[in-house]
Image 1 (cartoon, helix red, strand yellow):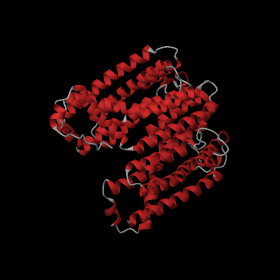
Image 2: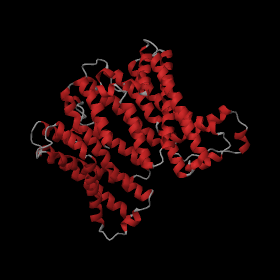
Image 3: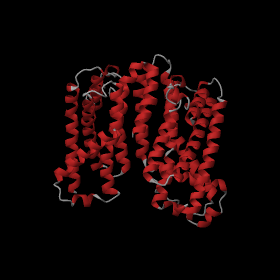
Image 4: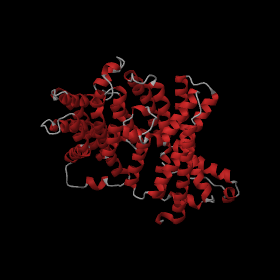
Length: 267
Length: 218
């Protein structure tokens, strides 16, 4: 998937550009990478449609203890998809290192800091681009029409995407074995999404899950998004949790990635 | 895979059990194991694809002194065995929940998983024979997994589906695998659901074998 290159007509073009332009250049590359493989978009879209219009629709008829389960699940499934797509950047980075593409990227006249921030931003933005149509479907279904609420919800989703991207990058540069990496990232993705309030309310989780779910970044995003869309309030705690998550894992991911880049594959 | 199964069962299924009712948890529990079996079974197709396009092992394997038909059969048998082994702890957990862990009916639980896996292995091998890229394989795999999981009686009864969709649900192999497991829970006979499941499973396995033989001719 991560086979794209950055076209450079003149090496001085990049070295003379501002920091923000270089960051955006890196981000654009990651966005283009995802859309160059439309199959993943097709499969995730299909999964979302079936989960929402088959599973959620039918199961909500059985869930009598929680009225309004369908809208609850609908919003949560969008949050879940954002997290899921954001994890993909880790696979891209791992593959790049394995295939030697990373060595090429490091020869580009882009400072390391911009390189890393650009990767994280690209991972987050493409998750958002991919998820916006699904968010639009849910917004139409549930009649979310307040522009401020929608903007606040999108901000929550973006913060989640940014933080999960950082988490994914951290894992990608920390785990060396391909098999172990696949397993760790897949389990992390599953645990972060399932042990959260994205798909079901906290009150109905088993106690061992309910103890952990409040600390999941997906919980912060889901609760904050729902609060924003319902127009009832701003979930300050959820927002603070998301910001902390972003700061920690973006910082960690950047630090580990930087060390990996500077030390090469033998670091 | 067992970790996957545990998260599916003890997080998702348990939560839906709390949302809908305790009997619902027991009703959908085998679904976690069958989904794990499905994922494990699809590894067979993925391995065959990787042998050809990534590891370049396909040519070597085909030079081995094994008749092609035997080789195709062995790939399918190996896939089923791998799936049963991967779901071994999960099947034991479901059997414990259904009170048949120390009963001869435990064997029936494994038979259900094996028969179900047979069809999925065949499907995955058929898909791998035609997929030119891993993305295509992954997409088709996703679509099949969605069909097996959500257009079946794993989570809800067939009567909840629109009438026009019900035949699709009733012919889904996952539906009959779930029926067989639920028969174990209710101490009923699994003969009828397993015998219905054998039909599509053998058909998919045959399709997989034919596709593999065609693929190895190229």
